[in-house]
Length: 180
Image (tube, rainbow, N blue to C red; front, side, top):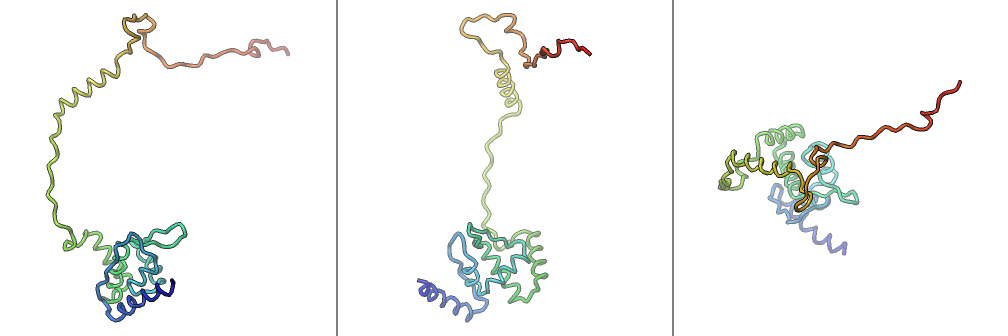
């Protein structure tokens, strides 16, 4: 089975080497292992690990076994880095600075999706109406509870309920006189 996988990968490597700078079709997967990313980009895996230390934007997740799992946006970022470093001959510091400027200025306007039409929000209730409703709710919450149908309240029941306070008790040891 490993031999079959190598045969499937071999044309991709040969194709990548024969066409430097060609657009790479990224498969529609959720996660890519470091070997798959290295193969897609035509880079050794150690270069990807080094770029992780140099570019904070490149942070692949790590699976339960500790293996790096790149998302599609990570692969796109690696391809962008490869273009900057290998084709446009930027230094690592220059590429880092350029990417930081791009991040500050926002995404590339040519890559933005078409503008969506904004839907108006539903009409907000009048502030006075809301206050009245809140006061009604507060009145319901602060009403005295009924003791039952036709029950009469006693003077003790109509008093405000106070939180229970612990009563201080004297122990037998405190009542005994000290004899010296």
